[in-house]
Amino acid sequence: ETGVTQTPRHLVMGMTNKKSLKCEQHLGHNAMYWYKQSAKKPLELMFVYSLEERVENNSVPSRFSPECPNSSHLFLHLHTLQPEDSALYLCASSPLVWAGNEQFFGPGTRLTVL
Amino acid sequence: AQSVTQLDSHVSVSEGTPVLLRCNYSSSYSPSLFWYVQHPNKGLQLLLKYTSAATLVKGINGFEAEFKKSETSFHLTKPSAHMSDAAEYFCVVSERNQAGTALIFGKGTTLSVSS
Image 1: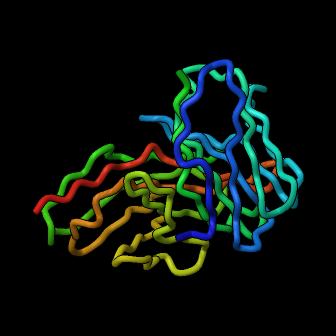
Image 2 (image 1 turned 120 degrees about the vertical axis):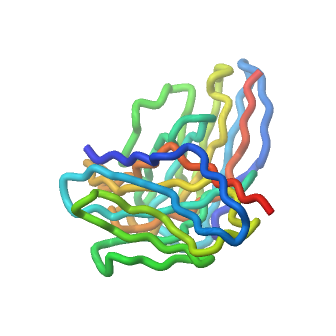
């Protein structure tokens, strides 16, 4: 295990639902990330947090809302999603937001939007 | 901007034969490069990384990669494939931006291993 956990592992939701994805890291890292992994496409970076402050938002639709209450926890709040938002959502952490740092990934949440 | 190209979307080998997964990158400065592996229904696991030290990098599970600046390549190799190596492999280059850093992922190469 990498020390990064994600819940739930699978989620099915309708377009009018509101749900949240949770990520927790037990590594003492200061940076956390959300990625979207769609079939046949490269991983897409969605959000970056460093010391609980958002430092990157890659033009993600507002129906995705991140929250980082402390350096160990990261949430992704979902509302009024579209079927094309169905994907594997991966959380990652690293000691610092720095080019040479490797990132440690959680197992992901498989999201299906009906 | 940095980018990474994985030249093969799918590689098939027999158990016990060598593995070669190809990756080319573009970068305006000395990059950090990584290979990650993703087994079905699992997250990504780091295999190895290059950060301007030795050009031949050894990783876990017998994998290694060689950084060749003149060819802008970072190919992943293993002398003898094992059935458990069947997975998706991602070549990754780091990019500096306003936030500090971002990882740029290739599209992935699916490795199949037959007995």
